[in-house]
Length: 439
Image (tube, rainbow, N blue to C red; front, side, top):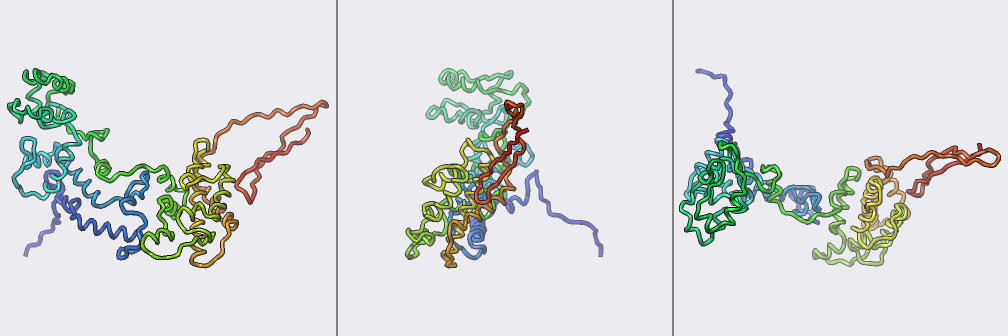
């Protein structure tokens, strides 16, 4: 028996296209939704088999930080974005693979209607219309660009004609057929009946080199190239930006506090009013003040316990009266007149206050512990001091000045002898002290 010492590998490329393309990007939607459901269950319950109590929709969780999400990605959208990127590669690439696909499935500027077996084309052709609508041609030689059907203006020329399409003798002509000696050579009939359109065409620049290659560009990208990131951004759901959403995830804020602040600012924590809206019958009462029904706004702002904590922080940060909403409380410490260091410390203070308010509520609710706001002040200050080591913002710069002591009648003068920092233990303020002696 003959034995061959050789290593056999499966071919992964053919005409510069991945043969494992379908395994990578063309998954069944049902499979993607199932895996996405596991991710959602694990996020809210810690187990892929338990649904838990989703407080915020998964679509919101999959938004970017700037739009109030967690920066996660929906697998269905991610899969579609990869297919869109592949479709773009097929129609914009000059590689042998792109040329082969276009020759096999493209006829006179349109998708071929008849069936042809392919593992790549069924997933790619679904996104051709998106590529067609969102891209345009830069004219080189003009040999690859259909004069009537392709977009080298804002829309194809054939759309300008509407009911006058009978004026066109040949819809299969290329741009190269209407270029002569590096300049446009438009049909006289077109110039006679559509002079405005001819002016638009003549404004389109033509490459000076007749051998230049026509280039398909993605209109929304500054580089003209569609990347996988651009493709995902194009297809993903969008939401209005939120001013607070990105800053609460700063590195100097504990992640669990950032997560709670994210839920609170979305008004989605497991309070009694939320349980009532979900069909759970219960008598609601705030455990911290025992005066009002429990809601997100009441727990974290209007309750006397929460108000005492906010007034304590507002006094020490010199921010004035208590605002009427949690978002305004957060924004009041970030106005333009304060230094970057103070703004970051206020972010820490805000998320820390939310954390200790919620923690105190749970102690009262589940452990029957009596909690006083004055006892929480010290814990909040201690956490702010510990987190302040991670703050990177700088304080407002100031110029040093030279001190000239005044001279008295007998020739003596007062000299600044010492200048030191005195920090009060019960306040966040830092005081400046000095000692004057007679020289």
